[in-house]
Image 1 (tube, rainbow, N blue to C red):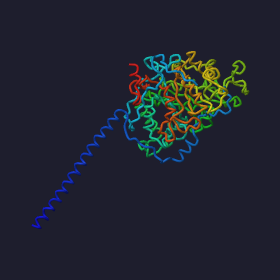
Image 2 (spheres, one colour; image 1 turned 180 degrees about the vertical axis):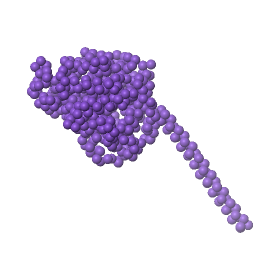
Image 3 (cartoon, helix red, strand yellow; image 1 turned 30 degrees about the horizontal axis):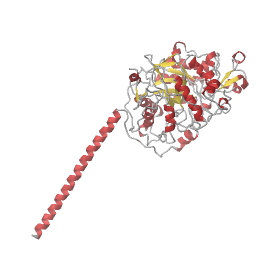
Image 4 (spheres, rainbow, N blue to C red; image 1 turned 90 degrees about the horizontal axis):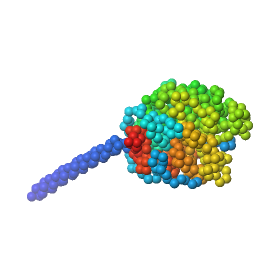
Length: 525
């Protein structure tokens, strides 16, 4: 009997062990099935353009890169300390095409997974044209370029700055998801020419956070960026920001230096236009960022007249545009202004005077008074010309027009109108404010509110400066981790992002702008 009891207990133990094993196996099977379902859910999100792994910012930072690109932040020549340059917001109102210019009702989705998106084949049906002061699509519909700047290809990072902390895929997707329909990409002519010669400077990025970029050279990464922008319905403007690759390269007055010749500058534009001529993701070329220079600098300063002088920006812009159109006649070209312009063309039309009293001053790239006397002539491509001034507030430099109790009307009278707004008013060509922005504090916020009012009331095309957290005198749309958005600044700028009252509007006829936008074809159907 005793032996039978022992055998019976042993049998129970064996049966219990088997039961435990069965339960464990069943639990494993259930877990596997749930994991499979979850994976299918993620894949479904990917197919809906919001896919991948939400990678958190890494603490692994390339100290050398950060000191080069962050400590030497791209202030973009906005410290015009020697220049004697020359807030009420309007109510929400309907634009001339019946759309609401305010975006306060547009919902911005936040619950998104990020990852590399499937890249559509490039197209050639999104090229843009101009008619008077408007920019039109291929069907004659008016479009509104409302974008943002993101620098780094000019600084020595050789990709977008901030990738030492952030995920490229996430950043591109969030720019689109937040409703910006174009990115102005500052680049150096030197980097482009290196690519054209088969040289590929290292792109500096956090290889843990951006592991999918490992093994790519800097040109391959740029092509990857173009593909991800296309997948998100984003367009690009290539900006020749500086001749040489340098975080302070924009401080140089002209489009050439001792090591980068005028021909090198032309070659960079020509090579880019040829390489991407069958891809309308790149819709425009900003021929040169902020040509400038003061009267005492003589031939070392940019001027605007009817000559063929080497430092004549008007003539150079025409030649540069011709190089672009020779390779791709479909893109827009943006021509910025200079810094100074003669007060008396009859006496000083050749810019020979070195007396500051003989000139009007404005921000670098912001003086387009010369258009009235010597407009840019692109011949048969005149319908591809956009003028692109830059404008900033008193935190960048205390210009004379900020003295006293300035307001919207005084800014128009003392600066905006005669320097560039007349181009819009007289229906000469479209305007695109290539740079504006700054800190959300006084004394900047008053000026920025008036500038937003000007953009909103006149539907001026614009690219806000900037996405980067490391812009020293303006700050960025994201905070230091390059991932967290400055919600106060975004809500401010959102008022002048193109939307229909519910969705943001992209510039691609087929691909929606992020997950909160629609395509141009959908908007105009």
